[in-house]
Image 1 (cartoon, helix red, strand yellow):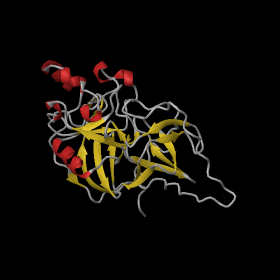
Image 2 (cartoon, one colour):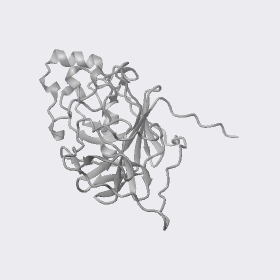
Image 3 (cartoon, rainbow, N blue to C red):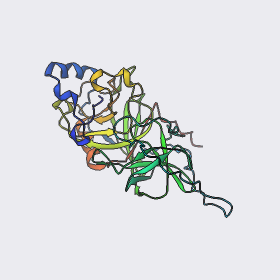
Image 4 (cartoon, helix red, strand yellow):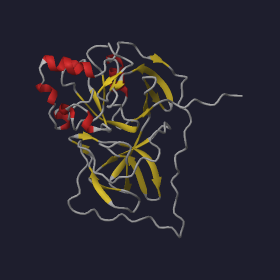
Length: 302
């Protein structure tokens, strides 16, 4: 299910802490449960080849790098609330080609809508004390585009300076039709698990996002296992229950395993406690996660 404001680690109190046991049980009927199945190794399964990443083009003597306009006073810092509007769409939102580099701000930096374009917000090294690493999706001469936190299928362009690069080795792919989550490392499948996803009207958002951070479970219904907050938010924030407005999509377990493989959550991705523990132990913040309806079928070999 969606989790509201992620507890004090993200600086925001959980509304569910105020719920009584009957309300929590009612909420449990709206969200998915994860079955206690062990993941099955699938080391031979690799991601289908996608479009190759656009290379960085070095400027010719006649070329100039688009200048970064100074950030005006009063720009909002991107935080756990929905990001400011105006940022461009991810050009390849459903591309499962692994993203192998991330970017961590080392100070507050302006985020632009295009190389040399308008500064629309500021990106800080942390969101409510949690270090932020954003996957790199595109490059132009002197500029780098990253997946934007607290937004769906949006990117931000950053000029050089004020950030450091991070190597990304892992990726998580969620297939909605198959209700399957697969963890990849260096493009090769490590394990797959069945999951439950968002109910009609509150479907788990499609597209590329990333693990924003982790937090302890606020209630026993989460199975006593830490929660991953994703950079994605509900596609229709008004469709979720009032107590969950303003929440992010989460990746987490549940207190029982009764509804695995069904569409019963408020948009979150639900899996087994054992699977969640393994991902928590192996997969760091900044790891890309992409939700697709189905993976493309590779062409038959001759």
